Amino acid sequence: MPALFRGITIDHVELIVPDRHAAAAWYEDVLGLSIVPATEHWARDRGGPLMISGDGGRTCFALFEGEQTDATTKDGFRRVAFRVSGAEFLAFVDHGRRLGLTPMAVQDHKTTISVYFRDPWGHDLEVTTNDHEEARVAPSPQM
Image: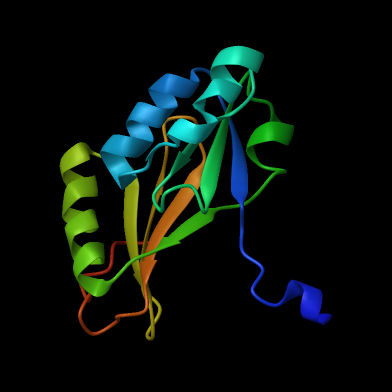
C-alpha cells in the first residue's frame, strides 16, 4: 500500500432521510451525535448535507434530504458500526432499550461484543466494543 494511504480515516457516510433536522435530533438523542456548526450552512444555503458528528467533525454522517429507494438505503452500505468502551457499551444497551430501539440484538463475538439496531429510516447500525470482559451482557435471541 502506498504511504499516501497510511492513517486514512473515514470522513463521512451519507444517509438519505426525509427530514435532515429530525434525523439529526434522533441521532443526538440515541448516539450523542450533534450538528457540526462549521458546515451547517451547507444544508441551509445550498440544500446540501447536514453534517453530524460525535468527534467534533473528524468523522461525520452527512444527512441528505430526499426519498429513500432501494439504491439509497442498501446499496450505499450494509451497516455502520460505532466503537465505544466497555462501560459506554453497557450504558448504551440500557439507553437503547429504554428508548425502545429495535431490534437491540446483542451478539457476543467472543473477543468483541456488539448490539445491532435500526434508525427510523431503516439504516442498520451497530455499537461495538473490544472491551469484551467488561461489557458482557446476556446475548439477545437470533437477530
